[in-house]
Amino acid sequence: AIKRVKVSQTKTLKNKMVKSELKSAIKNFENVLLENDMEKAKLQYSFVTKKIDKAASKGAIHKSVANRKKAKLALRLNASAQA
Image (tube, rainbow, N blue to C red; front, top):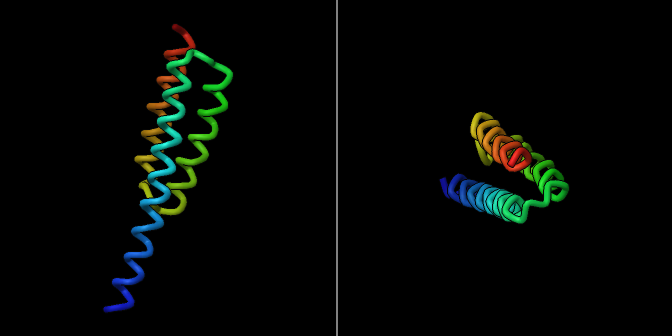
């Protein structure tokens, strides 16, 4: 039981770290969108999707959540490209 607690604490820390990086990447993407720099935004979008996929593959977030986040960000990118 003691080992289980230790393992779960380690996994919680790793998941927290991955999720924190993910939130930061998404925030950076949204800031680039606000600047209306489409070239930077496209590069940032590919970086964010890579982070999202990595988080999903590590099990930090569910695969469906990852797909939903990517779709939402793609919609925002396309909307700002048309505006």
